[in-house]
Amino acid sequence: MGDAHQLFIPDLRRHRAGTGRFRGLRLVHTHLRGEGLSRDDLTDLALLRLDAVVAIQAQPSGLPGWAEVGTLAAESDEKLSSAEPWQVERVPDIHRWDTNFLVFIEELESRFSRRDSTRKIHGAEGAIVIGVATRDATSAQASLDELERLAETAGLQVMDRFMQSRRKPDGKYIVGKGKLQEILVRAMQLGAELLIFDSELSPSQLRNIATDTELKVVDRTQLILDIFAQRAQTREGKLQVELAQLRYRKPRLALMPTAMSRLTGGIGGTGPGESKLEINRRRADERMNRLEKQLKKLGRDRSLRRGRRKRVGLPQVSLVGYTNAGKSTLLNRMTRSKVDAEDKLFATLDPTSRRMRFPEEREVILTDTVGFIRQLPKDLLHAFRSTLEEVVEADLLIEVVDGSNADIDTHLGEVEDTLARLGCEATPVIRVLNKVDAVDPALWAGLKDRYNGLLVSARSGDGLDELLVQVERHLFRERAEGTVGS
Ligand SMILES: Nc1nc2c(ncn2[C@@H]2O[C@H](COP(=O)(O)OP(=O)(O)OP(=O)(O)O)[C@@H](O)[C@H]2O)c(=O)[nH]1
Ligand SMILES: [Mg+2]
Image (cartoon, rainbow, N blue to C red):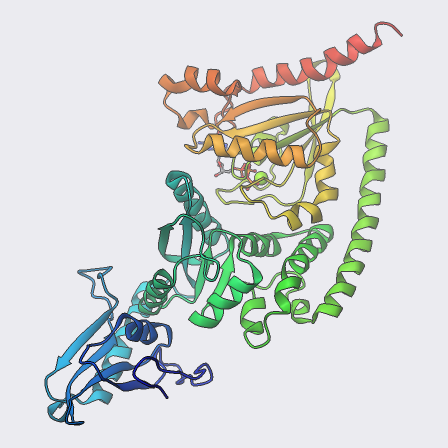
């Protein structure tokens, strides 16, 4: 129902037309001032997934004149991102419009779904990644690259990416409304089911976007939490992830009456406690309490074990660094073991310790642990506190940096921040710049000077002898000096 100025469109969400991409509804209305389809009309077309939006001219006589018919455009391969995601046809006289609309719309729908089967890798959920650049466009792009890799790590297929520059994120949708609509049409064209945002969405932003697009919506934090859920191996790891997920989702549960199942479902694969996440807030509190208690107990066991190891007198060395820097590969090299090292983000979640032997019968315990990442969710850091205590209590840290990565400064900053948040600024650190085999030797000297670290390659073994010498010097010389006076 409407008047000359506006039109009220009721909630159409229940009006879902089967498996088709469109809703099975056409919006037909008159325009009284002789204007054609407006931007608002076309926005409704996209956001409401209408079959068509039609504006009919009302002639002064009261009789209908021309009509404009807007429908969504199935993209053609030649022009991948056409400027406008819709097409508008002007019909001079509505009475003489002879298109069979049913045939037309069925053909259009099948063109939309044909895209699906050719584009999508079977089984993988299709996703679009979205970033907002408020200041530094380069680092926003790097962060979005990383989000893409995270999505792939989670087993998703990234079908497109969008970056919007704006002074500050939109309060309602993070990106502007026009951009959101463009993204939605693209999602429909590609058959993507999931939108992944590179920043944390507030509970209300999450709700707004999910309600208006009717797509699954995930932000960086949830994506990381879901990856952790997929990869957690040990009981402690699983409990920690479940706790972090509950903490993150609790404020969002209240806002999700209808869209709940979609929003709490996570991304495809079920992680620990996935079914339990559907519970209500009160039960969430109870569950969180219980998890905290269990984790506390496991933490106590862990610290007992650590105490025992301490009494044995072996120095502890921890590998820390950004995810994918090569920590596990380095541990394998240095201790001749075979822990999982993969070209994936967050290949390692649970700490692994190995003995490392030096000449002269000296030994240390070397521990590999979870990697850091920009915007590491604070709930996750909190939940992983007890495993990260391994790091905090080490006698020496080896900070592993991927020397071949262009984004090295961000990585370093993030690692320093995280170490500070864990309260281990006082622990001595040896910095190694790893993967030098992948760096042009002409740049080695500059790299070394600029970042003040040891050049190594965990892959080829280059530089590791020097690293061992330094570790030994740090651990045993200090010890030797400490005993001089006693
Ligand atoms: N070229 C090159 N690649 C390396 C080197 N060290 C590790 N890599 C590769 O980098 C990728 C990540 O290595 P990992 O050892 O799993 O890295 P990580 O720091 O343990 O990563 P997470 O556990 O995911 O935080 C793997 O594909 C390794 O093969 C190196 O010295 N040179
Ligand atoms: Mg690892």
